[in-house]
Image (cartoon, rainbow, N blue to C red; front, side, top):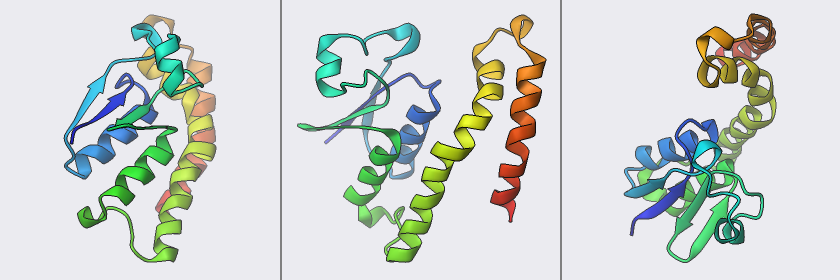
Length: 145
């Protein structure tokens, strides 16, 4: 069965869900939604995701939102693909890093990301980029440790 992933590919949260589906070699359809694509403020979409955000996963009759939860669901639904650690401690170590990315890395790196990806080159604010990069560098050092 093909699942459906709602969200624009420029969203880092949509990208992680799409990347997971690709790593698991799952057939899926992606539907552009959010930002310039709209859709998320419609009553039909908000029935499935009351937060009016992306991503949203439809797997048959089951609907799920929140990117990290979707990643966990896809990995747990397809354990034979080996992407989710089987051991409890290894699994929760992986989950810790997933949550760390969402709650610690994303907030400080978002400034640079938005400036480089979403703001036209002539309108970028170098101070925002520099502040974001400076705050992000020590976090990347944790990944290298």
